[in-house]
Length: 350
Ligand SMILES: [Mg+2]
Image (tube, rainbow, N blue to C red; front, side, top):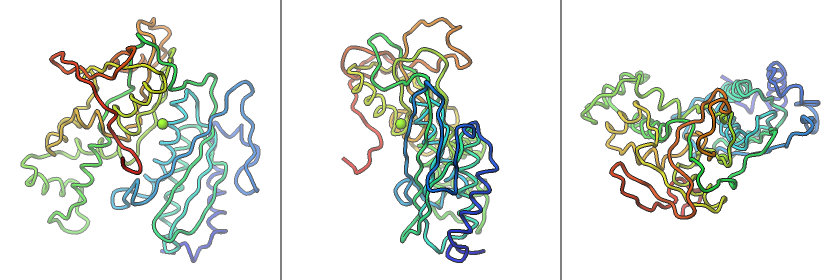
């Protein structure tokens, strides 16, 4: 048990450098100079477009350390960045990671964050190329920049009237997972160190219904350790990742493309565990699927009726609606059409 202030920055840097050098990602061949010099040097594949994106996770704003293990925090900061690179039609290659932590933080905790970062970078085939370390006066701040490359960039602005609107997977799992984590963090009368199963047993009295850990686990994991989705191998006209909720993100796509959209409520994919958990918590599963953030599924538009052979392994996601000239509408199961507003997560309130 050693706080950061005892280990010091140089010793930590040495450890990171060794660990990062040991992990060989596909991004490795692009990296000319990695951690340890004044700046990273890299070469991107000739003819490809370079992509760069940043995301920050601030304790108390984006996360609560009661819910996350340090490994999960490290993993998540990579996934949210990788998701943005995939959403442009590219692949992640290199990452710069900056971490600020209070000096009394356990060294082991910090190392676990880096292990999560390196494991996720390995998963996406990218390398840690550099970053910065700083002390913080209150809480943790994780900041990452990911460099990627793409053959052709897919923007938010290319949707055309008549295109289908697709998502890559079920929505609302992450928001439901967060709601479960909040409930489970409430002081329930169980002994210290009680397992998640024990807590769920106690909570089922309050909920007047029971949930198995097998139902809860995929939702909680989806929130704490999301895995970025790769775009399907087919012709796409516009794409973005769903980070702030379907209604808000589809509205962004419409605005950038200068089009409208019609979404069919009963086509929005909802997972079985999410439906069961939401109902137990007294939440509307469909509302979670429409406005819950942090799913990191991709939302894209594509011409309808493409031949199967052009679609690659991922057959093209789930069709949830179509692009129309103007207006944003939701069609309910009874066929009634209603306008919707951009609702979801926004920083700085409204
Ligand atoms: Mg995004």
